[in-house]
Image (tube, rainbow, N blue to C red):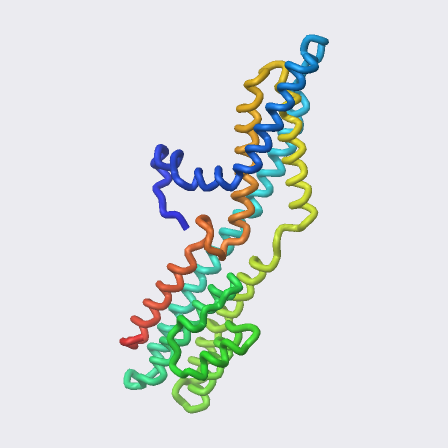
Length: 296
């Protein structure tokens, strides 16, 4: 995720991300530039249709532009809604893990270093595995484990976050059955553990539910038809200035669709994705400090 000052216009206008978008769209822009130049050449110089009472008009594109604008607004809003929901879920992840650690810190005896160390290790591991699970690339080997058997079990499981969360549930239940915590304290801890399950499931819902295929296909066809027919609307009035006009309109429309595609899946590593790496590190540091487990 990019850190920036929204009030500094000059740096935003010339930010390197604009060049990244331009490089991504370069093949489409080259095609539109060549296509527009060919249309201008054929209409103006070869067939000379403008001399035979052929006059282009942008009336159709003005009307279609209203409809296209509504589609793009809906497209960007739906994509941003997914991005913002993902951000709220990871904010809840931070709060729920803190609450869980704070309650464990209050309930566990101060001298019980084994339990404190175990939870200080496993809770951040759950967060890191969820983060990688959403990217479909879990790097369990890079994490710190209390027991090597845990690493083997996690790598062998199909749903790795569930495996870790089941250990946490079992460990909390053992604390209750051994008399370390009371029934009321168990209920309080269960709420935070349930929240972790709900957060993970909601993130998976966003990750595994793309925008409906028919809608995505239709908006792309609409944009394509709109920009491909643009040269015919400007050619006799703007002549060869049609080429930069078409390129500018194509860049704007395609950029909006490109940004929407990028932010609708907010858990990856693109420049506009959520800072889940930083949030996971923050949770790790918070949990370690709360449970006072130095060395992890």
